[in-house]
Image (cartoon, rainbow, N blue to C red; front, side):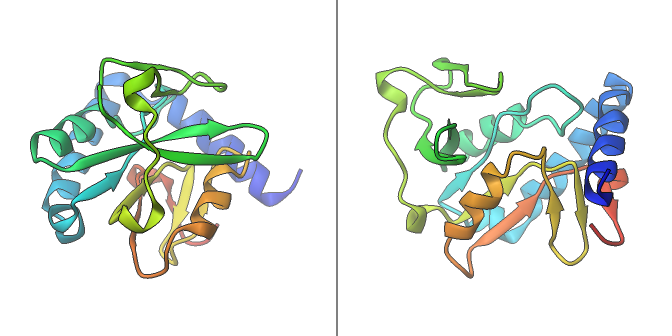
Length: 170
């Protein structure tokens, strides 16, 4: 097994088996830090994702806070055939449905307006491991890697993870 696959497997296990009370507490700390970041505060349009419930940082409170702050929120819609994601404006938080991998994404006629990449000020990305050189290991399908290659240079990107997910090198 390749080193990257070993790291991915170990991290997924560690994420999945952390206590839910610890995950909620750690998530709240991360939320507070994110809400104080200049790039979050100054952004008009933020691309987020709906956490899957497999040990990820909880993103529901981030989505709600961004909406309350008057920010436009964009969520990914999975394009399985293209191995990519399409950024779509969230118009109605009640109209989310499970996508191809069980991750909630915009559904229904109100939630189909695509966002131009140039309009997204900040993208918050999931991952199973990160390092201090801004590298990440995702879940292994390559969707976010493909998306981030198209994302404009100079725009802010934040990997959302717990301290134990930060490694020296990935």
